[in-house]
Every structure is written in structure tokens, then in C-alpha cells.
Length: 48
Ligand SMILES: [Zn+2]
Image 1 (cartoon, rainbow, N blue to C red):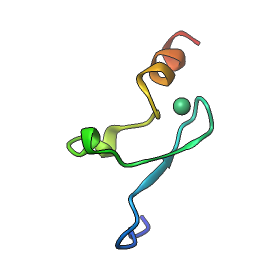
Image 2: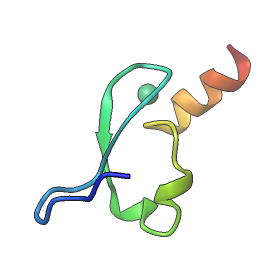
Image 3: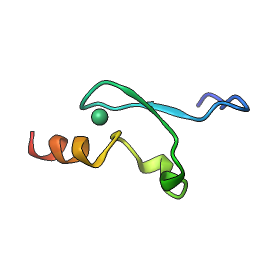
Image 4: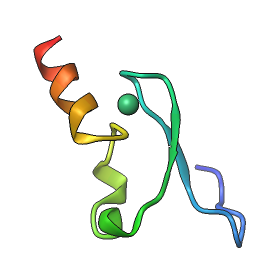
């Protein structure tokens, strides 16, 4: 696992829309388990 640079928020790529998204305050507790950029993409991944 790569280290996170100071000053840069962690970033992930959403497998549904392919866009990168950054750490948000609301994810501070479960950032590790966050896979999709939004609830919408999560829903789409399930149904799609
Ligand atoms: Zn997405």
C-alpha cells in the first residue's frame, strides 16, 4: 500500500463511473470500505 502524502487527501477510483473521488468527512469512519463515489453509483453497481 502506498503512503498518503501529507496535505493530499486519499483518492479512489469509482468502478461504476470511473471517476476519481477524494476522501470526505462523512467517510472518515469507513473510508477503507468505501468503494463507490456516491450512493447512486453503489446502487447502480447492485442493480446493474
Ligand atoms: Zn461513481
